[in-house]
Structures are given as structure tokens and as C-alpha cells.
Image (tube, rainbow, N blue to C red; front, side):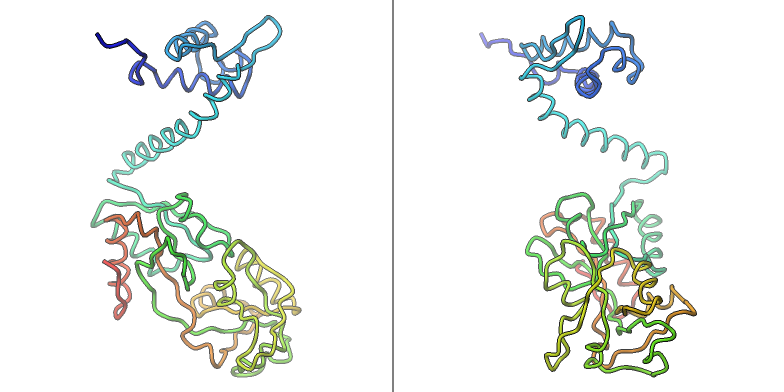
Length: 310
């Protein structure tokens, strides 16, 4: 005859939730108040969980409440799973309220342009998939998709991370340099790449690899002359403000210019940087999702002449 061991289906989610809350409050009264239970109900749930585990998880005296060593370890191990389950339930509930079949978490660094949002609307209308947008640090384009915080990112290329794949490449854009309107070069029609060595270019702050940062802020001109870069930024708007103040300059692409018209800035084309700025839809190579493939196809339709990975 098989031994009778407690099984997971005998453990209620309420018991787990109650223990995690008690571990945070270390007070039965506050735990009961947070969860909307009576104190006796909290005691019952903790006792039932301890019976299933087969050991004491909480030590309670007239003066204090504390977790046992086993209780501390149990909470440490079960808390991430509980939070993941709670998050999954909340997302499912939100999608149900919106009438969506699925949700994609898409991260961005910078702005979301009209052709991108049109693709999102088409994804919702044609496939029942909504997009939950996440604003990412300007200099950390890949961390969130690598650790699973988002399903994909729309960020500036290149992407040479072995775990990632570029599902869609947006049209290439020319690069411009943003200068204060009073800058001595502001009246020019364009500047050469070699002249970037006369400016102090802003760089992006974050954990991106050196190859990516160098593509966004070149460290040297084609002849090898170093390009100064003494200040960093975390947002495009911060960069615009610093460039307008006159001490720094910033490389930007045409869509940024079109969405950031300012009288205190001039945007000059940089000869030699034509077609060198490009966004990409990037996701983990081991987590390709039909919804992501559908989105890449829809983005390609919004930008004729481009090709998706689908």
C-alpha cells in the first residue's frame, strides 16, 4: 500500500498567500487586516499549511511572531512562484476585461512611432492580441527581454547577443547631429563625420555591450580621431535639453527630429552616417511566439520593402 504523503493539490493558495503576508508583517492582526480575514482564520490557514508540510513554519509567542528556519526557507522558495502566478492571473483578468485573447509585453527605448502603433492596432483587430508597452532605460536595450521581463523589445540595432534574434528590421534611417541653435556650426547645411571630433557627443547610460554603445556614439572618426563624450543620458528628452544648453551634441535619427521640433535646436545631417540608424523587433531565439511572428508580418506591411522573420 502506498504511503500517504501530502500532495500539492491539498495545499490551498490561500495558505501560501497567508504565510507570505505573515512573513512580511510578522503580526497576525496586520496580516488579517491586509487579507480581509479574521485573526482566527489566519491561524487556521497557517496551521493547515504546517500540517501539510509536516513541520512548524511560524513561531508565535505573546510578544513576537517569527518564522522558523524552515519557514524562512519555504517562503524564500515559494514567493517567486506565488508572485508569478498572481501576475499571470492579473494579466489574464485584464485581457478578459478587454476582450483580448493574448497579450504581448513589448519594451521600448525612446519613442513609439505611428507605424509601430498601427501595427499594434492591427495585431489587436486581426489576432486578438493586445500589447502592453514597457519603457526601458535608453542604454539598456536587451536586459528586459533576456531576463523575461518583456516578450520582445523594439530598440536600436545592432544586436549581436547570441540568445536573441531580430524578428523584424525597420527601414534604415540617416543620422543627424542635434546642436544648440546658437552653436557655431548651426548654420551649416550638413557636417562631415570628421567634424564630430570637434563636438562633445552624449552617450547612452546603461548595461548595453560596448559594440552597441559604439554604434550609437562613435568613439572615433573614420581617420581615427577620438570623439569626445563626457556626459551620458538616460532619456531622449534629457539629451535634447543638454544639447540645447550648448555644451553637448547628440546623434539622432529622422523620426526623433520629426517628433521633437524645437526652436532652440538645429539638426544637421552627418555625411557618412546615411542609413546607419535602424530599429529592430528583437526577441529570445528560444521563445518565438506566433503572436510575435504575426506582429513582425504586420510591421512589414506598414513598411513596404522590408522583410519580417515570419
